[in-house]
Length: 64
Image 1 (cartoon, rainbow, N blue to C red):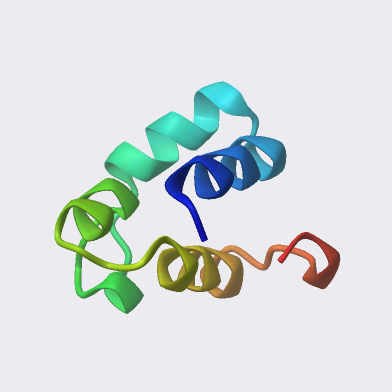
Image 2: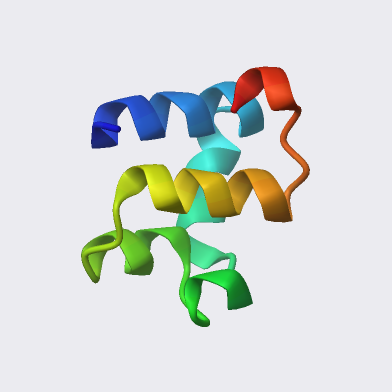
């Protein structure tokens, strides 16, 4: 998954403003105690990060 697609999906689910805040500030244990932005900066694949976000935040299956 391209990073642009990842960011689009985040914005579609959370809303553009909150998606950025969530990615920057919300620490998730499933990402090794990282935020979304930190995980991506540390080399995690965008698809893996999206799957974690979906699982943790109960994103509906049709949006995954």
